[in-house]
Amino acid sequence: MRHSSIGRAVFIAAFSLGIAGFVSTGAQAQTYKLMTGPQGGVWVPMGGTMKAMFEKAVTGVTIQTLPGAGIANVKGVEESKADFGFGNSISTVDAINGNPPFEKKAANVCQVANLYPQYFQVVVTTDSKIEKVADMKGKSIAVQTKGNTAEAISVDMLKANKLSYNDMGKVNFMASYNDAAALLKDGHAQVFTLGTTIPAASIMDLATARDIKLLPATDADVAEMKKINKGYVKGVVPANTYPKQDKDVPVIAYSAHFIASCKLPEAHVYEITKAMATHIADLAAVNKAMAKMTAKDMAEDIGVPFHPGAAKYYREVGALK
Image 1 (cartoon, rainbow, N blue to C red):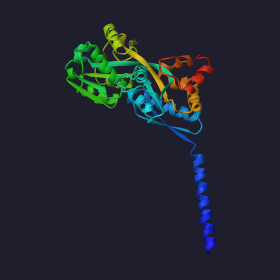
Image 2: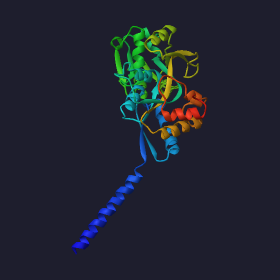
Image 3: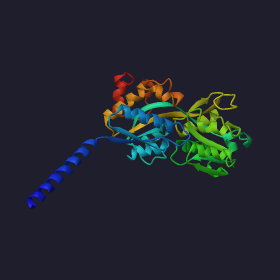
Image 4: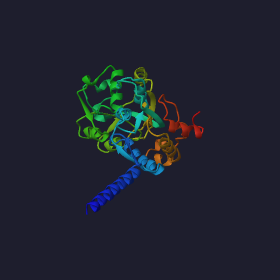
C-alpha cells in the first residue's frame, strides 16, 4: 500500500512536471507593449492597426496597446516599461542627446521607421480675438499633460514669444485632445494646442460646436523656436483642411516616427519593419499622410540609431546603405 502511494506520488510529480514543461514550451509566446497617444489623436487608431499587423507578421507575438504621448513613450521604452512606441523627432533626438526634459542620454531607444509629418496646431475661438501668440497673455489655455510632446512645444512656443505659463490666465493640463477641445466647447478656455496629423479629429469635432481658427506661426516664431530645437521646421495646413478655413496656415512641424527597445530580438523587429513597409496601404487607411510613404522614407536618418532588425530590412531593399 505504501509502495502504491509512493508510486502515485511519483506519477503525480512526473505528470505535474510534464504539464509545467508543456506550459513552458507554450510560453514562448511573447507579449510586447506598444505605447500610442492621447485619445483624439491619430496614434491610438494607428496602434490598433499595427497590433493586428504585427501579430499576423510574427508568429507567437501578441501586442498590448497602451495610452501614451511623445515624450512619455520615449521614456517608457528607455526604461523598459514598453517595447514599442510612437515618437516625435524633436523630442526623441533630445532624448538621445540627453537634453531637457530628459535627464540623461537614452541608450535603449532605437529607430524603426519614420512615418509622416506632424503639425503643432494652435486652435483659438474666433470670439477670443487672438491673432498672434502675444495675444494669448491672460487667456485660459488647454494643453496636454506633462510627457506629451505637444505640451513641451507649447512651452517652447511661449518662450519664443517671451511668455510662459505664468502669463496665462489659467493653464489646463488635459489627458486627451478631446478633453482639451471640450473646454473650448464649454467656453472654459480660449486656446487649445495639440501636435498630430491633419485633419485632427478633435479639431473637426470642436468646429461643429464653435467658430474656431488656427493661429499661424510667423517666420519669426519658427526662427526663434529653431534656436530652441533644430528639429522644428515650418509646415503648412492647407486651406479647407478644417471648416471655414479658406487660407493656408503656416504652423510648426516635425516628424512622427516609430521606435523600439534596442533589446528586442533582431528577427522580430525585422519582420515588423517588413510588415509596415509592405502594408503601407493599411496604415494610410488610418492616416492619409502615409499614403505615399516608401521604405526609403521610412529609413531616413533623423539622428536616432536604427534597430539592427530594421536596418537589416532597409539594407535588403536598398533603402539604407
